[in-house]
Length: 310
Image (cartoon, rainbow, N blue to C red; front, side, top):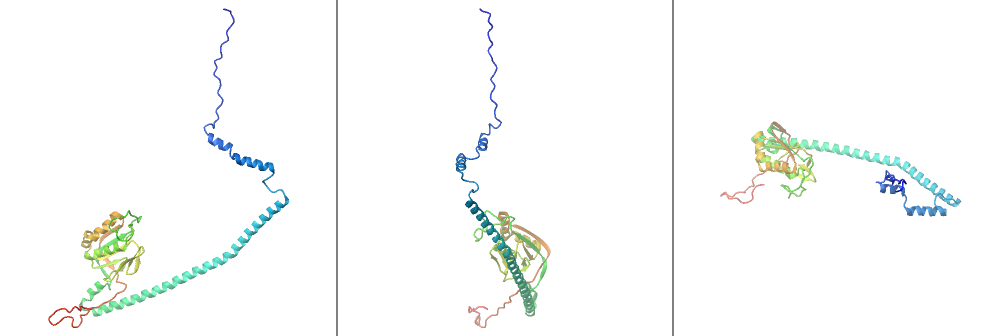
């Protein structure tokens, strides 16, 4: 064995190349490095080499560009001038239209006042005629015809649309011809009023409209009409009668249960309370009708001839 020293192998670990901080964002890096598509870049390079693109270099091209800019400026200026000239005319026409609307509204209000005054005068004469020819039954006739104001114990029933006025359909109104929503319909108010009459009410008003034997509750679109007067919710129904007894009888009736179903299934809001005193106004207009037996309507033996009464 010779004494030559053996070189110790180098066991040091080779260093790895440094990792880029954005190595995990290769897609974003590629987009940033190649923001312009290669095809566009190549086309731009060809135009630049051929001297095409950029601002015009020849005098003719420069004059054409200047003429185009001048024409565009003239068009914008003329349009602005015309708009400025037309503005006072439009404002004047708008003011005239507003004046016409206000004048027409004032005239309609005056005509409505005349109608109300005439209606009140006719109603007053009708009530006086009813008192004059009513005899001993004047008060009863006045109550039944709704010609006088009524004050006494009774109930207050408030019916209002649901908060969202929406429903899922089905239920007691599915054949009514209306969409099943949480809105109160005319036939709902008809059932409420008829239920109160059946439960013993002596006089009824809806939102201040006194009901008589000839009153009609109907619809015009989504609006409810009482004697052709449109009403808006909430609908306040006042009924004169034995307050607590009337309230209990109505809630136990079929129409009261119908109103309860509307409340449970459609969200229609209702509130009923017995009152010590409610006041109902007289009916705005009256139609007085009389009936008399025809002469010879019955034979001597008492048999009916079938002619009836008028």
